[in-house]
Image (cartoon, rainbow, N blue to C red; front, side):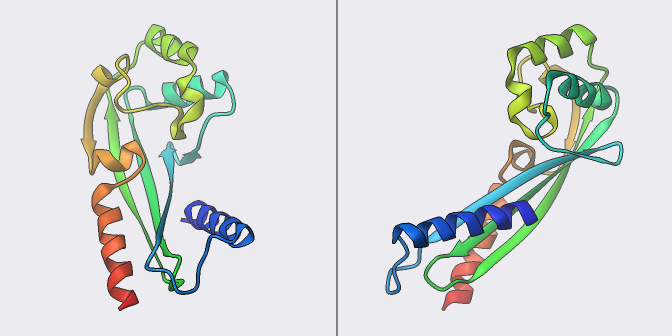
Length: 157
């Protein structure tokens, strides 16, 4: 939640500096989000290196990871802000080392929380189950975002 809030604060401050926030404007909503992965009691954000990505993915192999996604909806007109988080769990079969190596060599692992995407064609066959919303695993829960938008607009009335 802190990262999604910080993103909102940074964007709102930048909009104020550049003069894009108007006092009498219609409701304009800003949606910010962040995702972290928790595995073996450790928070996993984007890996800093291929070695760290390998460590992350090996840790998921034959186990599971929790994906926590936070969403913040800020009303730029009223200042009302609503936020919440959602959790999903991903269970994995054993992931062979050669698959891990191939995924890491592609480079995409360094750009996503936890170093792995659910839908990657090389690793998706090793996903045993997802408990919770796949949208949460992908980085933005549609249902949670819709709820926060509605809550924000209702609170503004």
